[in-house]
Amino acid sequence: MTEYQKEQHEALEMVRKYLSGLTADELADLGAQIAGYLSFRHDVDRFLEKHFNHLCTETCYRSRLSACCTREGIITFFADVVINALRTPEIDIQLLDERLQLPHQGNKCVYLGEQGCLWQVKPLVCEMFLCAKAEKEVLANNPRAQKAWETLKLRGKSFRWPDRSVLFDSLEEIFIAAGYTSSLMYLHNSPGLLRVKKMSSEKCIRQ
Image (tube, rainbow, N blue to C red):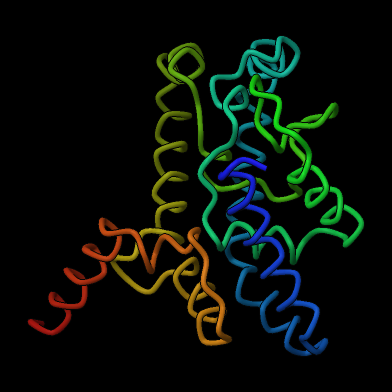
């Protein structure tokens, strides 16, 4: 396993272990916490399908030339792993785990299978990625679509950018309180994001 595969595998195993010990009511509570995020993801899916599906399918999926999916892997937040596990049948989570333990083929993302991405709820970084060609071809001459996309990007930021209380931070805190730690917990170990949290806290105190 590469270092990337190892940290991804360890995070997935933590999440699986923690979720397996929850009661039905506790799982329902977690589901309620992510409901707003899933609604946002639904809106993003609808937007991308309407405006980009024809272009991206031909340019990247069929040709396998995606600038993102030809790398070893992408940035995944710990919360991405949690949300995907909550929304994915165990048999498919097992498939993810098995894929992470296979020798890596250097020409594609470890999560890319024959039918596409193996995630049910893709990492937010993947979901919000549009290459320059796609943005230019679709958005440059469509101000309404451009405005809608900018609004969606702001909504996405509201779940992960810790200048306020955000879902991705809260999900990390749940696992930290249970004794887990992961290199993917960026909202608790990234110097940049910790600086944002500190500035936000100081601003609240001054107000």
